Image (tube, rainbow, N blue to C red; front, side):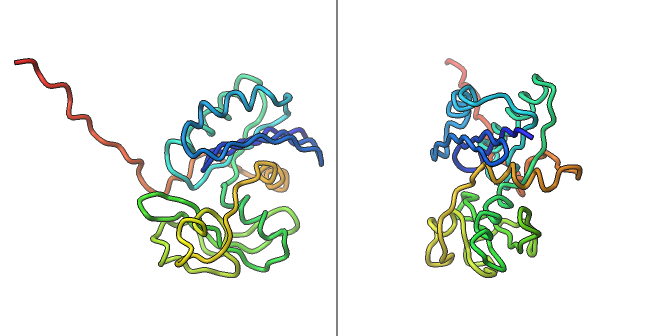
Length: 203
């Protein structure tokens, strides 16, 4: 199956995956996802299915990727599935041979999204500690820690920074094919919404 994989949980990354052949595009900027995503997608071939990273991640960026994936799938008449972005990070780290991995990514507000995993076969992962949002000091690290949390909070979260490889989303989606893979975003908390004070009346 030929996959288009999209992730906007932190930066913007896409991949076209056809078996072992992978074509990637990425931009590490954590803002402007819509502006980065459109030209990246225009450069990639047509696919048979789409997989999108579902977070957990901040509201705005995550929403861009999921809305785009759903719209493309509807326009092309192909299936779209979701895989948590933290699952992909865990699988990338577990490929090095670790028995357990903790993933921590930026949740803003001086907090992280985190979860712990063990491998499930050669291409999937199993949650040990479920998705949560916490201050860095409250993360219960199992095994090695990976993700942006290690870069942002090195004292509380010693480990290594790691970005989502969208091709790994496709790999996990293939392993889970036939099972339910919802595209609902994992926010874990309400988005930051600031009420407008309104326009002042002229005196």
